[in-house]
Image (cartoon, rainbow, N blue to C red; front, side, top):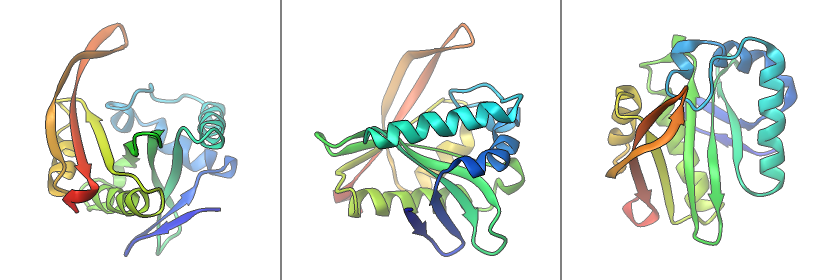
Length: 176
């Protein structure tokens, strides 16, 4: 079982036993507002999501961790590489933090841990993030971590029947 440790957090490989805690986060519309999922309405949806992510990890296409508070051991979110492209040594980072833990620097700390893991253990050259232009909290976190804004993917995805733009941010190993 893989773990990544930071000063206040530890990121632990996601497993089915985490479904209840993750459901409580993923069922909050404030948390899922900028995710590519709708707020969950049943814990079985969290179990399905964990199963899907576990299968993608087995195929070396993605990896997902729970974000845990080192003091309380509580799950306060999740983070991972939504896509892994080892041929091109790049990955796309995605993350969520429970609303009760917003504004405390946990997202930035978790992303920094993932960058260290990605550039170090996985041998990545590039880590990117796609963010909706209205997701100001996420944009601030990425800017604090000195990600570079590369541009906007116009009407990139269709969510709830509406086309959505994404801003692309990246960090290269050479930027560290």
